[in-house]
Image 1 (cartoon, rainbow, N blue to C red):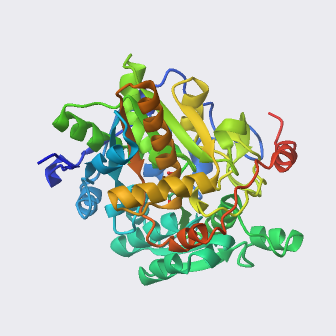
Image 2 (cartoon, rainbow, N blue to C red; image 1 turned 30 degrees about the vertical axis):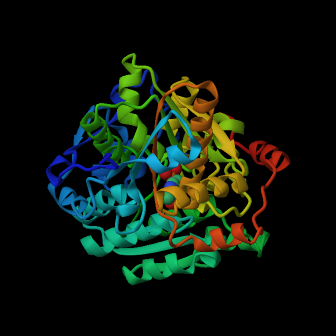
Image 3 (spheres, helix red, strand yellow; image 1 turned 90 degrees about the vertical axis):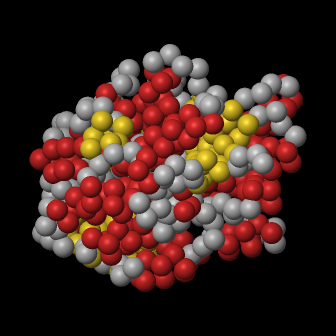
Length: 450
Ligand SMILES: Cc1ncc(COP(=O)(O)O)c(C=O)c1O
């Protein structure tokens, strides 16, 4: 019988996270204080983050211990399985070998609990009573709601309004784990109120929801803020994916030639690829490809410069590829990819040629998702489907060139709470949005001059 699943026992869960800052040729430029525009130090972050996470944010230690309490929770679903996509390979008639890591086995259904769990743990340890956050598609909010329930911390979620309407079951999932959920922009915060005054029908965006969640944390003593992607410590926590994958590749005596990851803020792409990029930096042949939506083409069409992480301009300025912090992307179904910028670590690696990027429209993406579902069984999240489109195109290219290659991607989440998106695709209601060049130009013109 051929091997399809590559499975590690519980005691092979990594006990340390991998910090790529120890190895990358150029570190990202430092974050800047939003007011003074001077480098922001750890003290600037203490109103909204616990010190343990701030230390991880700036650490250049290569390996960082995973606390025992976090490992205990990780065992609920980690190590996650790796699969060889034999049936997809056969359907494509490709000489390429396709492997994927499946993060949909977490209780929330995606990779996001890998960082929600440690973030809730460190906040609890620091005596916090509540955490506020934003969510796009609901995957991150659900993950933090789960983590809050496991560690006994209250969770408030500002959910991008268009997703709040599209994904009621995500909201119910969060509420089941005990979180309170508001559609964003909301009147709960000054940031949301201001946006609604300018545009009462605003569909919301991750940037707006972040403004609301940060304001909530900054104005309440007992409340901290948590971000589901972008920041260094978030990407660090996600490296458990790639570290496990490396062991799983060893088990089958293989190694990827090319890695694909969908890229919203960059955390699952980073988690799956950074432990391999460590080898690439040391000289190994390997391509790493970020896949983003054409409607929000951050790496492929954005500019590499300092910008705010949120819409209002409350967060530190980060050096990122950005479309402009007040760019509101079209309401595509892959809500988790509707972010105006990407993680500074991913951006720096992309800038230095250690990563590539492609952008796809959503109809092609759903076509790929359905081909995957019909061959491999799992219905992927719309975000993940972007990576699958990249993988399928690469496997077809391998066939055309008559060349073998090993392709790896992270199946970052399942799509069982995203079925409305599939319904819309199947009834021909999905449209491809043109790259909104004018809107991006306008948003970029408002970026701070540094
Ligand atoms: C399933 C899934 N994959 C990917 C992403 C994109 O985020 P990131 O780029 O941080 O992995 C999201 C975000 O919500 C998601 O839900």
